[in-house]
Image (cartoon, rainbow, N blue to C red; front, side):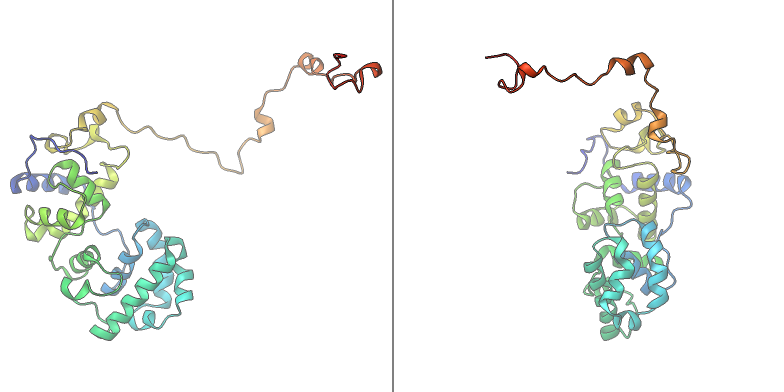
Length: 278
């Protein structure tokens, strides 16, 4: 369920523009986090990023694209080989079918080239509006929509600029508030803010530059919790103290006090086990 929005926060184009301006100053480095060389490679990387971090995808795609750099080569790739390369991204069997099916669709319908419209991209295997928007916006500079992932959905709900849990409805609401020339940039900024500040489990409301513009009712409570505590670094396995060495030595007197119980007298053995004589 999306977070409840304050009744005082009404989304307007002016308020959204102010939010985006603040995010531009806060996250000037915001960009698509996936590594790619061509529109085809960006589309494949975006498909693989479902239920997976961009960092993990960027570890896998260099090996994948070294073997299959374009649509014709990936379309002809043995499915088992693709599964093995992308295994660590999770759901690798379904993803292997999606990316090879996507490649075959490009070869059969578009001469191996990624089309330049959502209407032509979405029917391809493994491609939805989010993937199409990412590719069109970043690879071609075509502003045809706003890519809505989990970060965009969460942050836009918390800020009070959109409401709901349906990515298509969130996209439609944002498109009605954000100028077309900022659609792709909006995705990058909201994703970066969601990763760096507006965390799903522990948002840093007390440090957020959008605190005064935010419509989330819980922001005051989270601001009062203070900054996220840093976890102590775990010692390296090679330098970790053995468990036996960490336990304090037991005093000699205590060691002597713990003795094995003596055997029962012979006259009590075999009488019901309790030694009661009953």
